[in-house]
Every structure is written in C-alpha cells, then in structure tokens.
Image 1 (tube, rainbow, N blue to C red):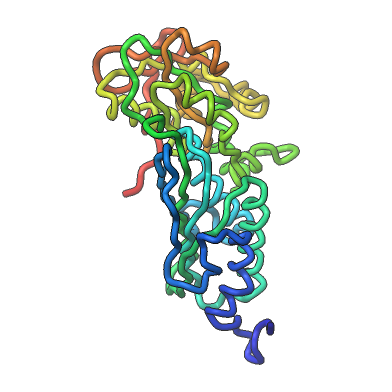
Image 2: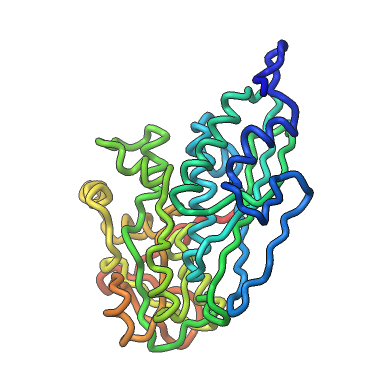
Length: 322
C-alpha cells in the first residue's frame, strides 16, 4: 500500500482504516475486519455488558502538541479506568477520531501505534469506529466494552452508613504531573509527568472489588469530587480525613514546601487525572481489599473534608466542564 500521495496528503479514508486500524482489531471476529458499518457481538450468558465512553480534546484534556501516541494510550487507559471501577473485564472498543486536515500520515500512524501498544498490554481490541476531519483541535473519543458477572457490577450507588472509604493509591499526582508537563513544577526523573500522561488503570483490583466493595468510582475529576459522586448516587455522606490519604514521594516533596498543609492536601484531593479508585466497603472487607482507609460513610448528604480533624475548605472539589 502507498503512503502519502504526491501532494503530501495522507491516503484516503479506507486505506487509512486498512493500514492504521485494521491491525488494532487483532483478528477479533466481532470487528468483521472493519469492512462493515457495525460490529456483531454475541451475548455472553451469565454476564452483564458494561459500556463506558470518554473523549479527549486537545487544549482541554491534554496539552497542545502532545505526542499522538501518548494521547492514544491515555484515551484507552482513561476508559479502562472506568471499567476497573465497575469490576469489569475489558473486551473491545469503538474509536472516533476527528483530525485537523493538516495532520500528516506519520502523526496518524503514531496515534495508531499507541493504541497498538496498549491494546496488546491490556488485551483489548478495536471493534469499529469512524474517522473524520475537523476545523477545530484534535478530538478523540472511545466507547469501551467489558464483561462482569451478572448482577455483580460495582456501582456508585451501593455505599451504606457504616462503610469505610478507601483509595487505591497516591492522590494528587495527576494535577502535579500536569504542572510538570507545563513547566510550572520541577519533576526530577519525570515521575509526575508520567503519572499524568500514562495513568495505570487499576484493573488489578477487578476481582476483589467485585467480591468486597459496596461502591466505587475512579478518581478522574478529583478525589473530593468523585467521592461526591458516590455520596449523591448512594444518598449518603462521606467523611474524608485527607491526612490519611496516601501521597507519592514526589507529592510529599511538594507538600513539604507548602505553608498550609490542610489547604495543600485539599488541592491534591481536588486535582483530576489520578485514575486511582475511591471505594466504599463494610469494615470487615477492608483488610481483604488492602486499600488505604481515608474515611467513613454516614447518614446524610455530601462530602465532609477534614485534615487531622480540622475542617478543610477547597475552592473547587474537582474538575467540571462548563
């Protein structure tokens, strides 16, 4: 197959599909070789199909000029994080890409390569989608499918008074990582930037969540905001002590330079892009889950935030679109 034509333009849409995206199906029969306008997915007796969708827009969800393979990998990983929060096993995805017309073929190849790398790493295949042109910035969207044993999906609505609130890992690295990527924060070794650019979906917790958790959300908008989603869906109050929230050594270094530790912890808990999980479960399940306990579920509404017993006021609980 040919590359760009004599004008330097990328090959046509269907040749791009054949070259860039058909390999991403990894031979999945449901994709029909990307030769049809749909995928055909048989039912799986004893399982529920979990469907999630996320979109990324240049200049909003990732910096202008970000390497396109990293954009592709982050798109897949953020969607996988939503499946992880439901206790679901990934199955396949649908992709939509809106390319600015000046995007050359090598850049489009880099994007497809990023999906190829992480598709293999997480054992998930492309099932279909669409590519179009846009007069605006690069916009990409993914719909991801996963399977969970029937009736066992971990929802946001299952938290009950008396449950404990836990998190699966360090809080605040995503927001600090964005500051590092934008040159606003020193990042020796690139750890924080790596946490922002390539978060790790907590699929390793899938089975234990399905067995022990009463509710779960991934920390994409910020710990406080995502805890609030659980509180709203469950009709309860979540009480969080940010002094108990784990932080990475890099975040601890940043905290050491902050004059108000409660305020600084509140900022970390308001940053998005951590892609850890905030989980509720009965006390008897806490040891089995092995996560960091940061609070309790009570009767009431909303999220109450303290630092070592002192109330913490935050300017914004997390990321929202306007």
